[in-house]
Length: 211
Image 1 (cartoon, one colour):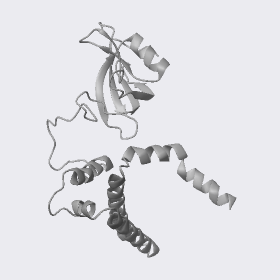
Image 2 (cartoon, rainbow, N blue to C red):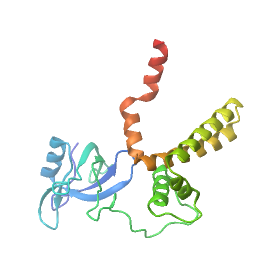
Image 3 (cartoon, one colour):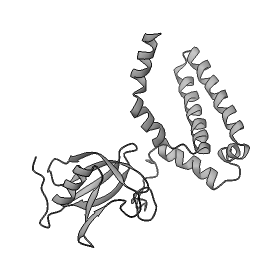
Image 4 (cartoon, rainbow, N blue to C red):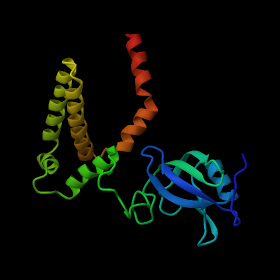
């Protein structure tokens, strides 16, 4: 495949988080920086302002390990999926895209990452009257007790084979597990990485067959 670089020898690279699929930044590569990226396995770009190569994280330590690079249908733009070691933005933000320009009121998308950040916000910036803040105030024993209670509720609903009730209880359990994760400093990407590493479903099937 022959990539199409512009008249300045550059091609835009949209950097995306491998786990969350969040867009982290948009940078530019020339042939040399793309070759370095593929050879070293970490993002390297061309700085248009400094007119030089720059390896992401060279000074900050916030490197980006490359998982895949995909070109668009016209072969003049790239999507680079990465596993990041730290914030992608020089401001310290996880993504460079945090200035909201427009959001339809009735189309606010749900994401587990968004819920996690909301829960974490109730810990770092306590809100009076918030149930989540109440759980953090009570501490891990209370949080674990709720996780246990919600687990039991899921089992009861599942035993009754009541799909609607089971979904409701699973949602309650997922929320309380996230509260526990925040309290322990476990992030969503940690769990996602563990699942990806273990291929947990196949592993469990194999275990059952061996018993």
